[in-house]
Length: 335
Image (cartoon, rainbow, N blue to C red; front, side, top):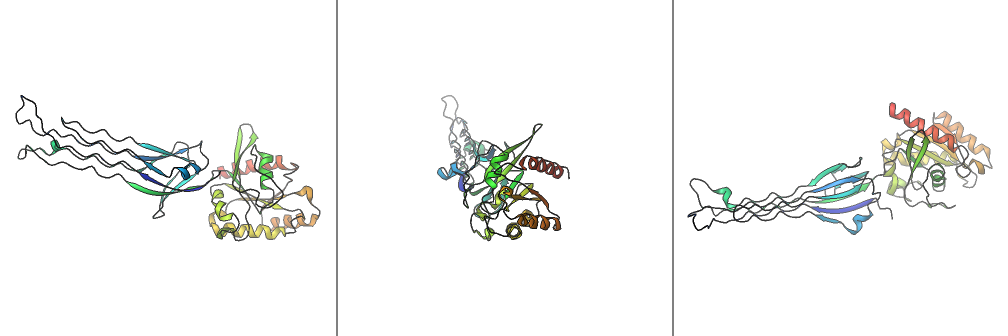
């Protein structure tokens, strides 16, 4: 099950309390104070891990607590510090304070590790308060409390390329054709209910990651369909492939389809709408009305949009498309 949102609570360990004690050896009269300090509480770290690709495990285990520091003891023995704990999250996870909405961390690299809840400081024992005027102090400190945070986790997939378009435009078919990903494919809208990631091998040790985003519809930025739930997953992409069904089966206007999706991207995020895009006419194998393809091609030419035509079902044009996308990514990286 793919889960891309979760709320968790983390609690750092409390500091151990200091000890009040005095030396009582037989041949050490007035031995003085010997209460040790309390140990510090354990910290809570979050760390990015490439072996995770969903936040599902947080649904069943939403609370994480580090051990507290041990209390100080007599004979000037300090308490042991509480052990730190590390909570692992998928790469691409955004961490927010659930109460304020403040972004606390953004995990984009393997092994990235951030301290989010600091353990409490151990209290001082009475030996720490001895002075020339107070040689038998009876004062000691309670350990301070560890930090507690309520966090909101939001997973945004890390992909180089995002495939967008209306439901049933052929996005899942395309990603299964050019990568090893095997998403569910069927001839009805909203077959894809979760994003799919695929690794595309260009050759000569050159690869890129592509994400198939569940179909968008008009009103997606307001939550219509599945749009609002998954638009965040194309925010990190470098390039968008806008897939449009040019077959006559949909009975939709191809230019209107392009404009609706573009409008939804802009309403959700201006940055998302300004990403480089290649418009791809799909299902040319089922093209009964050639004027539909010609109309879309002329529109893209007037709008100075990169245009390409393929059939994801038969594989026609897909190999060439892989190299076009790879070159585009290379150009974007060098610009």
